[in-house]
Length: 294
Image (cartoon, rainbow, N blue to C red):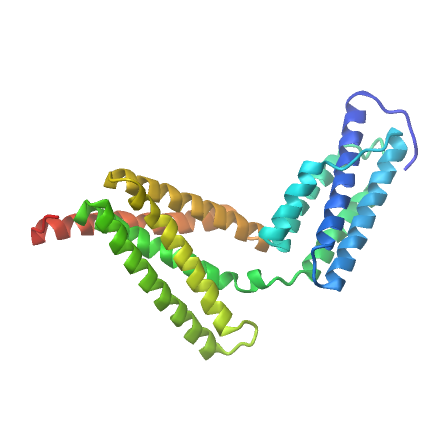
């Protein structure tokens, strides 16, 4: 890229581009060091090299050397380590897509920036082709456990709340119901995968992912009933936790698998809340017509 005098808003843009490319290069290099697959690590380092070249092109314009943004690097390395390579890389690629849109605003000043845009577009194809994460292969099992626990246990807790109106009793009943249902769901997933016999996933691991997702959800939803004696407050906190779980999980899954977030979130949200509302009515009806007082 030719060196030319830049100033004002254009200089600020170019410095931002240079900082982003420098930071992204360091992120790719750091993530590559985490990968057990040498081939995947090699691809990541190649992409890091391209990002470094892009940063050097902008450095030729600005005449300064910039360091990576340490906080951003640490954040994406953390995501890759604990939430998976796919999620971290897809999130980073979304940022790069925004960067490409910014590049198009300076095409008149730097016509050869088109090469950078083309190279950035190739990044995503290379990354998608290299990623094969176990946690995403078993995403269906996690969805099964999580979704079933949210729908069934949220509804059950709502029903228990209006039937019992005693937080300790609700918590104990919910915990027993939830853990029993987790074992049942895990065994059903195991038998389902065994019968399909696809060979792509292990029935044992599939059942484990389903069971763990179910039990973790059960613990989170029941916890408020152990922490307060106000059963309505406990139910309100549980419903808030449901929304947070649905929001967080759908954001993770939709980012990693390129799915429409809004549709998946709303679908899961309305199903869970619909069952909860129906269970309110069931709890009240049982309490009234059976005449049972706790």
